[in-house]
Length: 242
Image (cartoon, rainbow, N blue to C red; front, side):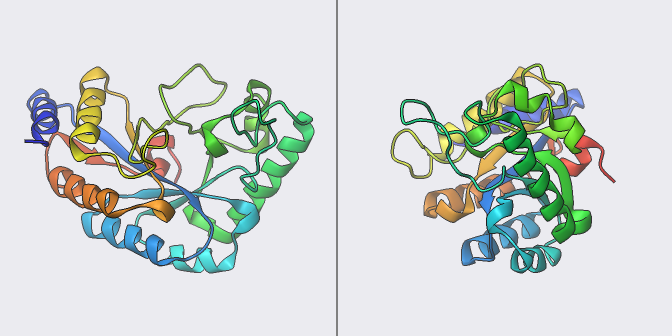
């Protein structure tokens, strides 16, 4: 029964001839791990493209070598070092207004060049801010740094460059910090499908997945892989990258 709401939404999209676009973003990649292998195995088996938000300061050739063999994988810039510069009284931010803008953009430029050099054709000119937070004055500088798009969590807002956000997070960060139940996640995806025709982003975090998350991904991919009411697309396709 937990899949019924999503199946109804998928069936409606299929009848209307407007298949939903789903895309997958996974945060905090830095190196090859068993968890990363598991994620890649799942996505490859289901032909689901995945964009890995890679932390440039902590990543190098080892990850590039692993991803080079991964079908459908792309790389986005996950800040610079995923370091918090906000005071304890505020939510964590690396790209906030707590430092000179030139310091922040300097790090982003380094991260952009570092990952572009490592990942070649798998690199996408997309910024994924750590903790999904970024100051407006930093956003304004992103086009000049070479970024084509921005991806955070939640509804898309007005921005000087296109936004391709994630909308459903598999982890209950404010509660159990474990995988969220299937019925809740599938209901959220279904609601997003009925709300608009915009792409729907699913957010995962391979380094902290438990059995519930891995199982949910298997079940979701099985449900959606061949359904005419949706299609999984890669972020490069969404932003129009070659």
